[in-house]
Length: 318
Length: 259
Image 1 (spheres, rainbow over the protein chains, first blue to last red):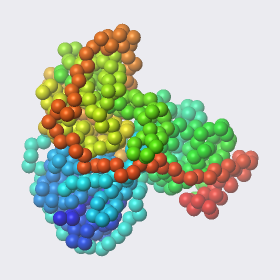
Image 2: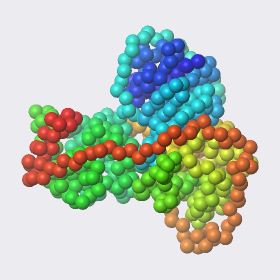
Image 3: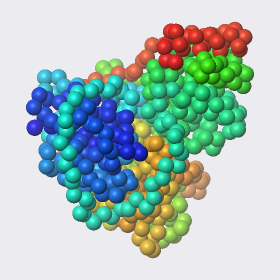
Image 4: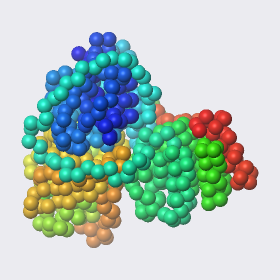
């Protein structure tokens, strides 16, 4: 009892940052006698003992490594049956949330996806989760023998706690799979993941056309930032959907969010309002975004943004 | 092809949300409700498959209060054939597995070849029904499809999806299966006027939640709700552009300490 099973996702041989955050959450939540177990999806030699993990379960199955959720569910399910953990936790990626949904039904377990925090009060478990796209924060009490959670990225500072974990190699997937990942390619390499980025530079309709996003790209490259976009510019096809920030896109939580030519519709604001600092550059002084930001420049973005990129270059790169 | 689409009615995403007086739920009085945007993609996808395989049959199902019938009528007007309404008096946040179990009970006797859902309903944001339905029905489930290719003759489905880190996956499975739809999969059509007229005359089959043989006690209960407010004091920088930019960088460096 009291054990925690963390599902760790990997990319290019590294455990994802979001998964490392889940280990930190597990350390906070774990009871004295509880152990932290890790189901490793894909291959990584990362030292998870640093994050308090006591047992790492690996599986060399290629379908698990290529992101087959059916294979991953089978792998994790077997571990749940064996370990009988009180908590199963994952990062709140698309893959992680889907995995948790399937596991919840297979084990008749209670699930909350995309939580911000968990607390234990007098033996009762409460989780905080954004609902209505983040327009409301719900504190929810959660009961049940197995409780499954996925944690939103960037919610925790990593905490280390040296352990020397046991490594257990698990059998490949013996069950016949109904699904097959035929292809898994990284279509954009070296791009910073929007949901995990420390700085996000976003553009809206104020850019007037797709070509002008070059201004956003240049500024983002200078800052080492991820690129975001408003729904309006995604809907007209200037930018891919993977860059959409907002209730029907991605929720971002960077240290710095720079909104350029974005008026600030509620739909967009809920996707970025948890950023630590928000900068807005807009020519309309009455734009709603100015009510929800820390620093604002009222001006012509076509004039301001190139100057800003140039100045940042001088300051950051000499 | 026998296609089932699961949809939900949610508050319009363009509206601000407030809490009711005692803070136990959101204030529903002044809200308008719409079909959850990702569910519209699911309905549209079903119609496109039917256009390809004309002897297909599309059944839309929703679980919700009486007013949720609107989203069924909208789907019928878009081109769905039949509609089932699981009438549920509960409107508050609760365990998503209850919804999935209720839907599975209703879907099972329909013996679908394909079940389509939105990637999530944008009210509870539980992201649970699609994945759980796959398990409960014993079907493979493919989440967040931004492209779907269904072959009714070969009885297989191939989807494309984009995951974090710029990973694009191509996944193949057999029918029957569950697919959850992501933005980008299609452009939902507007209902046509004749479609709307026809939809008005159709009968929506009603099933009461109590008639289903499932446990409805939620293991998730609301403790409290709050509207998040991060207080920000706007520092408006007004000068000529060169000076504005320099001042902004100074503030980000010295005051905010983020660069």
